[in-house]
Image 1 (cartoon, one colour):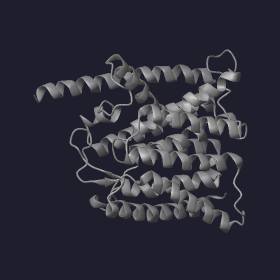
Image 2 (cartoon, rainbow, N blue to C red):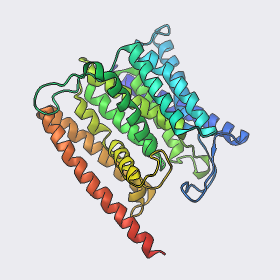
Image 3 (cartoon, one colour):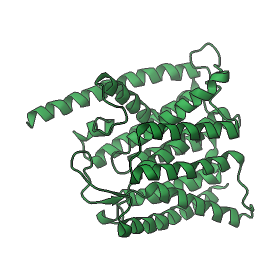
Length: 355
C-alpha cells in the first residue's frame, strides 16, 4: 500500500475503534458487567472502570477489516496465517473474558495459551525453527524441538504483556511500539492488517489514557493483554521465519525486551520467595519506577526506552553479525536487572521510612 492509503486505513480503524470502545464501555457500565472495582491494595484507580478494551480492539479490527475488503473487492479473502490468527483470537478473547468476569485458575489460563499456540503451529506449519547465528558458530535450527520452543516463547510473551498491564497505556502502548518496529523494519507495515490492528489499538488507547475525560476510561482486561501478547508474538515469529521479511530472531527479542525481562525477573524473585508467579502483586518494573515517578512519567520512560532499544537492535542487525546482538543483549539484561534491583531497594527504604 502507498503511504496515503496507509494513513486512510489507519484513520478508519482509529475511528471504528473509538466508536466500538465507546459502545462497549457504555454497555458494560449500564449492565454492570466487566467492571474493575478499585480495592486500594493493588488497584489504585479512583472509580469502577469497564474491562472491555480487548473486545473493543478485536471487534474494531473485524469491522475495519471487513470495510477494507469491501472497498478493495477482495470478496472476503484472507491469507491463511491471518485467517487462523483471527479464528484463534476469537477463542482467546472469549476464554479470557470469562477470566475477567469470573477468575479462572492459572493452570487453566496456561492450558488455553498452550492449546491456541499449538493450533497455529499445526494449521499454518509456522514455528520458531531458525534461531539465526546467535553465538557466531552458524545458524541454529531446532528441528523437532521447534514446536515446544515456539509454544514456550508465545506463552511467555503473552504472560509478559499481561504482567505489564498495570498502568494506563503501558501494555497497549508497548504492543503498538513493538508492532511499529516490526512493521517498519520488515516492511509488514504496508500490509493492511498490520495497519488496521495498530489503528484499533490507538482507538482504545485514547479511552485508556482518558483523552475523553476521567470518567470515560476503559481497561484492556486480561483478554485484551493476552490478545496483544498473542498477536505480537505470532507476528514476530512469522516475520523472523519468513524469507520475505527476514528479521533476525535476536532482534525480535530486543523489541520485547522490557516485558520479557520483567517477566523473567519476577518469576525468579517469586520462586525464590516461594510465591506463585501468577499471583497479583506490585513487584513489576512499572511499580518500582512509580516509587520515584508518576504513572504518566513511568509510562513515557518505559515506552521511550522500549523504542530506543528497538532502534538500537535494528542498527545492530543492519551493521553487525547476530552474535554481536546476542552478546550486547546479555549486557543490556545485566544492566536492566541492576537498575531493577536499585529501584526495588529504594522502594523498601521508602516503605521503612513511612512506617
